[in-house]
Length: 157
Image (cartoon, rainbow, N blue to C red):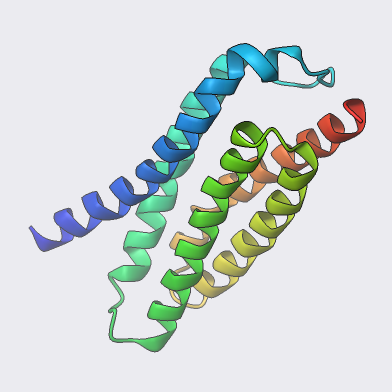
């Protein structure tokens, strides 16, 4: 029962980050975002929701697997702190890009986000290989999002 609650809490915290980011995103999609120039490889808007729900779920399971190793372990506490840091950066990207409508500012945030995800993967790998592996789709998607962010920046100077 405790494991199930920890898993639910881990996934819920990650999904909450998505909800926060989605709040800022939803307001700008039909207005500002619809008007900016986009590269040819820009995905359709409908794909982002399912992708992020999946990624946030994988992130929650990953965090749960590390948490299960024991919060008394300093490696676990540090790894989960870094995980929460990257989760905050994930939210911040949506706030900066869609809320502030700052493509350049978001580019800085996404670079920091990518580095923090890599740091989490390295830290999680020392605790649980599976937890680290579950974050590979996340860093892959953020890599693509970074390329998209760079393209949007230069197309909309």
